[in-house]
Image (tube, rainbow, N blue to C red):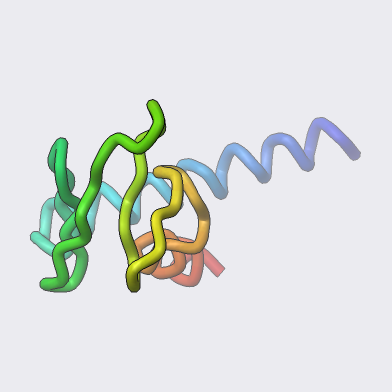
Length: 79
């Protein structure tokens, strides 16, 4: 039912965020005002037209996009 589905979504989100927290503790992931570093690769982070953007492979994507390497890693770790 809908309530159970929401509950599972909450569990998934907690697992996802715990994966990020673990990656930060181990040094695999770090954030700063002008960068995100994941697996030894530093990605530029900057304000573009008032939006928090991160540059990956020459393409600016808004922070929170699910297609960043660290997001894919966290999502795959929770399947």
